[in-house]
Image (tube, rainbow, N blue to C red; front, side):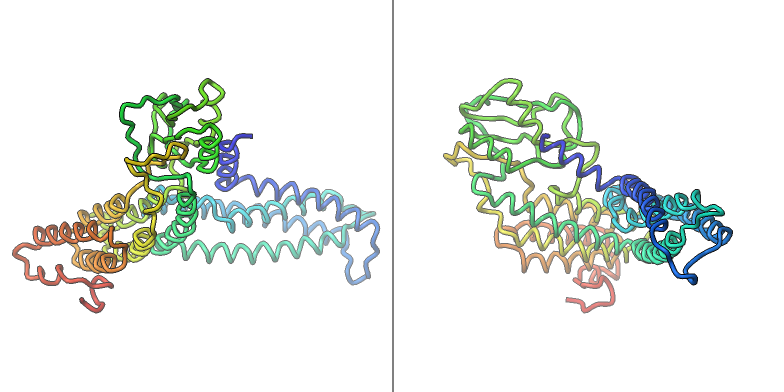
Length: 426
């Protein structure tokens, strides 16, 4: 099985809302059969027995309750989807589908339903699954407790700031893996410009789609095995049309359909970007949240300030990480390696501040919080990244001067404040 197939299966399993509930239903049916066999072999005390009518009533009530509760959970899920699309960002849904508590709750509800129904069909005048009825009651209590946890979790996640914090945690987790991949001795980030060289092999995409991930280790290993330079034509997250070049190899690399298929299977194309190897996608989601909050229909600059809080932490992480040793130099004599066209610090910073600065130009607290964020970044990021921050500060000052020209609040809009308005102005 190729690396791309394994990645797609893993993504499908993480994003599927029916896979774990289906497993829960099958497990519940199997457990009901096992419980019936145990009930036939075990003699319980009199206080732990049920009459046939009582067992049927209890099990019927549990089956009905589980069906109703499952429908209610699905309704809540649909409402969350609607709110996430209109208030947060449609890109956030890709992360929300993966929530383990939601999948676990659906699995327990459907599993309890299947378990109780399996017992109900065996209740008769000569046999009552006493142990099974008790276990079904315990599963009912567990389902209700898990439902309360689910409700509490998603009520808290309906806040935009909670969504921004969740996305920031994803970026923190995956950026460490991203940086570790670039730290490999034969993996470089940058742009390879062949001077008078023609690629020995060009691998083209078989279908259109966004590059979701790539097997950096596998591509670097292939480069070592064939003593060649493997160059990716696009960055992770870029949309690639069908027939466009994906990979180019330089040197004495193998050619032919087999080599193309193997290299193509180390890159995954999909309908939408993923956050695993694309930190910019997480920044895109947080910027979307701020943009929606600053729209005339919502007009909530405080939410934009809260998004900037978590955005500043993500930008600080990227700006303070040393990736210089993995940068590809045009004069490099290395000819056995993998070259990935990665984003620069300027790309991340531009993505994180440009739209919020433009859409929030009339909001004093957004301008003040952004200035505080940029001044903090200027003092904390690596020296080679400070020039880009200074440029963004100059753009911010120009925006403020243009928007608040002639306004009595020009001095306030030009002041840095970590809380937007109400904090300690610097």
